[in-house]
Image (cartoon, rainbow, N blue to C red; front, side, top):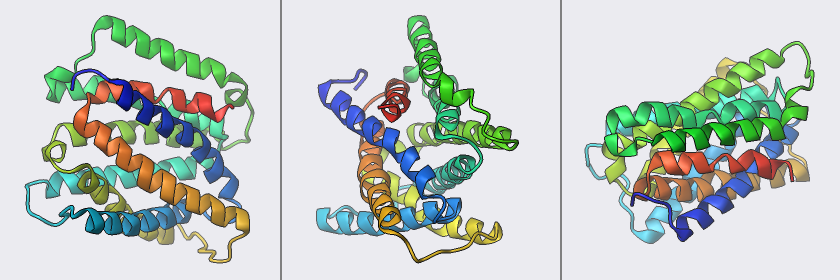
Length: 261
C-alpha cells in the first residue's frame, strides 16, 4: 500500500505509546542490569517467544528463500542499534538520547529512495518531517539542555549512531529480499542475531551479569521483552512489509512525546 490507513495508524499509535515508556524503563533499570547485558536478556526472551509464536502459527523460519545475507546484515545493524542506545542511556538523559535517536526517519528518507524509487518523499513531506523533528526537540528542550555530566557528549553520539543504525536497518529490510519474507522471519533475524552478538559484546566490555533482580527490574524486563522486543517489533515488521517505510518512520516522532506524559 502507498498510504497509511486507519489500521496502520492505530498500530503505530500503540507502538509509539509503548516505545515512549520503554526508554524510561531501560534507564531506570540500569542500576541493576548493565546496558548491553540488559539488551541481551530481553532479546533472548523475545527470540524464545518468537520461536513459540512461529511454531504455533506454522510460520517456517528456516526455509531457503534468498534472504539469509540481508537478514544477517539487518540483524547486525539491529544489534548495534540497541547496543548504542542502551550504552548511550548510561551517559545521558532519556530526553537527550531521544532527540538523537529520532533522526532515524531522515536516514530512511535520504537513503531508501536511492534503492526504492517509490519511497521518494515530496517536498511538502520533507517539510513536514523537518517540522516534526523540530517539534520533538522543542518539546524535549528542558531535558535536552540538562547538564548531565562530562560524558553527556558520548551519550549524544551513541544516540545519533542508534538513530542512523535504526534507519539503515529499515532500509535494509525494504530494499532487499527481506521485503518478501514473513514479518516474523524479518524479526527473527534481528532478535536471533542480537541474542548471539550482544552477550559477546557485554563480555568484551567487562559488564557484570547480575541475575538477582528486584521486583521492579523483573517487571521492567518482562515488559521490555513481551511488549517491546516481541509484540511491538513484530507489529513494526508487519507494517514495514505492507506500507511505505518513509511514511511509517515519520510517524515515530510521536514516541518521544508520549515519553513526556
